[in-house]
Length: 115
Length: 112
Image 1 (cartoon, rainbow over the protein chains, first blue to last red):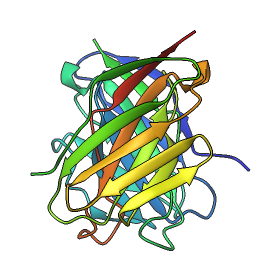
Image 2: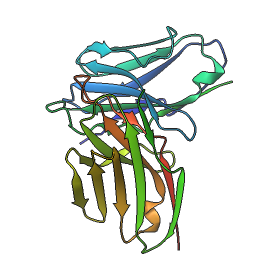
Image 3: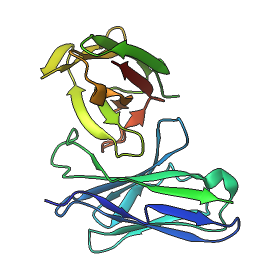
């Protein structure tokens, strides 16, 4: 079956512009996660969705970052007024969430470059 | 705070055995996962340890010692395709969901 997909795969934008990153999770997966990975670093948790609600947004770096999920499926991460420090790979993952330890399946990521 | 420490890079030759260590410090601990990530690729799940001891999955094994806040990933019969970054990730378990905390990763270079 299809895995987690993300679009675009690459995004180059100018400082100050808004960007939208999209994630299509595996069908039927109720849990969805966004992470950020800076060059040579580990993954940094941003936000978690259970269905369409986000019980934990604690990882969002600033109020310029927001995310939503609709229909228990597609999620969009929006970064407003982008800054150069926002440059990173943004990864999305989904899981069934029957158990706390269900495997997270990752998408290929969106590489964001802010000039 | 929460942190996981791993060596930044490990090198080995084809056919060898390599061990990648991970020490963790988290507020609450449920288990330790390992992920593999090839350059430009998505992280993929390798293994999970909730209990002390060794878990074996083919050429890969993972070990956990809760008393030492320590784990490792063991890769045997190394192949060139094993060249990738390997991340340990702790599951604090006190968040109600799988809020993984990742280490900074170990880059494994396998040479002929």
